[in-house]
Length: 499
Image 1 (tube, one colour):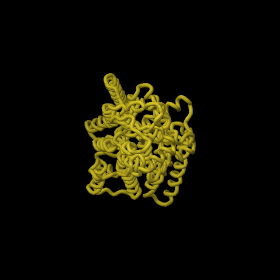
Image 2 (image 1 turned 90 degrees about the vertical axis):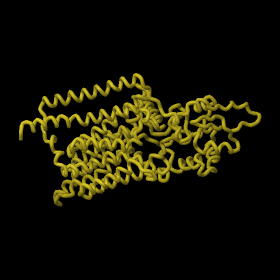
Image 3 (image 1 turned 135 degrees about the vertical axis):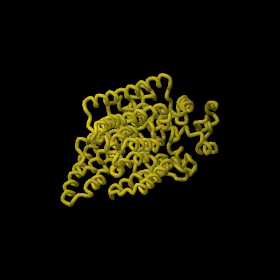
Image 4 (image 1 turned 45 degrees about the horizontal axis):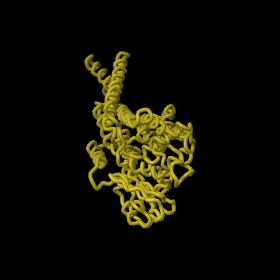
């Protein structure tokens, strides 16, 4: 090998080491610049509120204390660590804190994906896969716990896939990843479920004697991972809490992020599926049955629930990396290169410069930009009026639940659907959305509601306008308030406000 060629590989090796950091820094700065788009889900309010409660009480919740419809009912927070992190960041930097935290999570996700793909693919393709994964996930990138768990999910699946590729069991040194994931978000059950298919991939081409030995070692790792998932304040209850959401039946077809994909109009996910098919046909890829099973599983998840599209986007490339790399000998250059201490010094210096540049950009940007939550989730004036009237039992819109909790107002319902149950929330939606209008007066009477707070663009307020015993008190472009009609000898009601 010529000296120039050797030097070229060394230079490429240093470049490859910095590529994940560059991609991560780019993703971080992008999401920082569009930070307000991360503040569009009212669940962020109650996530932060619970984090603040945990910090104040040095304990985790076991019952509900935010609603007046389920007070004292058993409920655990499977995202307690994420909630604490969001609460700390919010207390320190207001809404800039959750934005920065989410942007860092996306940066780590993109960087880890590029790093894992780099073992099999050349740099341009690794970066392209990461960019496509980010684009596919844009609809669900919000300041919520699932984002903090995303880089852990990618790293965990990368560990499993790497072990399967090498026909060895995963190292137990990686088990803390599962514990971290289980404390960050309930999605850790996916990581446990993937151990089986990955184990099958690991033993697929081995002879029967080796298969049994290796499968036994994977089984032990799976048991250890299950135990690691219980290393949370809730212990084994974490497993039950994480699976409760999957038992909501019809309700999952009503909550937007749990709805199946709608192909009525062309979407990025549809393009990705067609591109995946085209890639397989064009490259003539031959995959083992376990890899095919994994790709079908991730595709089915994305089709069934739109919130699972990011799992498809970030995990399918990890499954395809090795087969794609085997058809591209160029991907091996640089991977075999070793770095001298001088090269490592250059790499570390470059990494520090990238981090410093990202933080400097953050400071400059935050000095003249104030992050704010989307207005249609924050009925500030309406809630001010309700508190002024001392309303106690408010029939609130689903999208307003998180904001009410942040204002210390007991809610009828909020984003914790697993607490309320399928029937309760389905009855609520059918009543508030006008699908079964006769349910609305029944719920108002059953729960002794004294005021309603519903979205201005929803059918509920129009139904209440014609409902005997109720009158419209306040209207703006975000929310509408109705209160019970006072009897003729009662105190004159407050005049209606309007924006």
